[in-house]
Length: 125
Image (cartoon, rainbow, N blue to C red; front, side):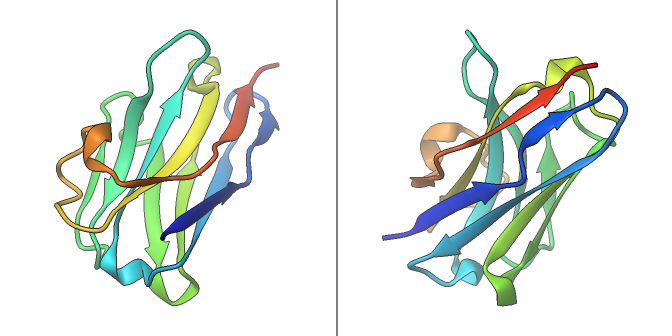
C-alpha cells in the first residue's frame, strides 16, 4: 500500500513562492506516475500538474502553467511542486496523488489510486 505525505503548505503573500513536497512510502517512487491536485473551499478537486515516472514528461493546468513546476527525486521518493507568483485564487488544499499504472498524461482524478491527506496553502495579504 502506497502512502503519501504532503508538507510545505502555509500562509504566504501574493507574488511570493512556495514549494510543496510529497514523500511516498510503501512503494518505489519510480514505479508511480505522480500528480498534484487542489481543492478550494466549496469547489471540486482540480488537476494542477503531473509528472511521468522518469520525469520525462510534465503536464499542467492552464491556470498554473508558467508559474508552477512539478519535479521528482526518485532517490528520495519525493515529488515537489514549486509555486511562484502566487495569487489569492491559488488558495486551496493541495493533494499529492499517485498511480501505479497508466500515464501521467491522463489527468482525471479517478485514474489516480493513492492520495495524500492534503496541505493547506493560503495566499493572502
